[in-house]
Length: 301
Figure 1 (cartoon, one colour):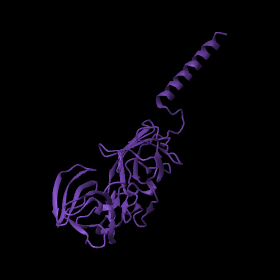
Figure 2 (cartoon, one colour):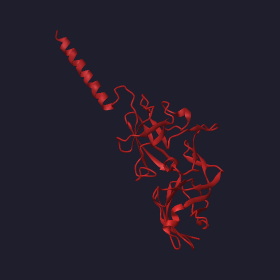
Figure 3 (cartoon, one colour):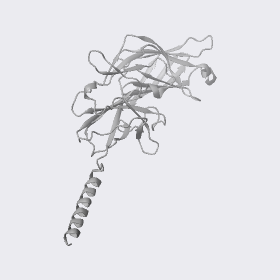
Figure 4 (spheres, helix red, strand yellow):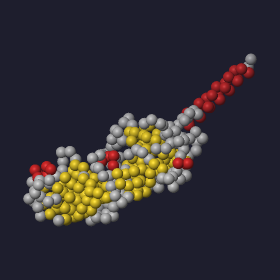
């Protein structure tokens, strides 16, 4: 009769130990979903605005730790899985369909991600993952802002959280146009701005993190902000100079011309104030973060 209470106590003690162990791991033998957060660079959280937009989506790949980011090294089938902004969490993202779970065997994994999420192809000879870029049309600035993250490595199910840090891969140009000598504010009502002879398409190799442009080049019309003479473009990195045309579209003035003799470096933002004078164009500006650099002043005719 005395053995039964002892056995009961032992069983309760074992159960208590097991529950404590489950509480420590947080798994209880169940798959552990990855908890993703995402930020941009050091201080910014978004390319165009200061917060992620509600409709933003990222594509995430989970790869066996320490292995090359190739199809045969994908872990748990997590290939280009779509995650969207979770409005309930600061910089949080949630699954938009399939959920990514850590491997149950407690093996470590690496994460690669990109924005904006879309179609990805596999290169035939190398099996690298490729993402197509096209900046010919500038009407949706956020959709053009290619970003990439490869900072999260060696994670496993006891870690749970994965904090992705994205970096801009393209270049941002912001031009604030003002009337100068001989030009009135009303003259700007029909103003359009374009940059000439820029490459418009490229391929971003997600496996290597390298952007490769092709030979296609065309004039690109900048996007105009509503209720302001601010014109924006996201362009491919380029070493050569480029010409901007400021056209009043009034039927008698030739376009104002500014030659920008500066390299466009990936991840940099170029902000300029452009004053249109009948005698020429006056430009002042700076290069900043996306990555802070210095300021400069440029005169053009």
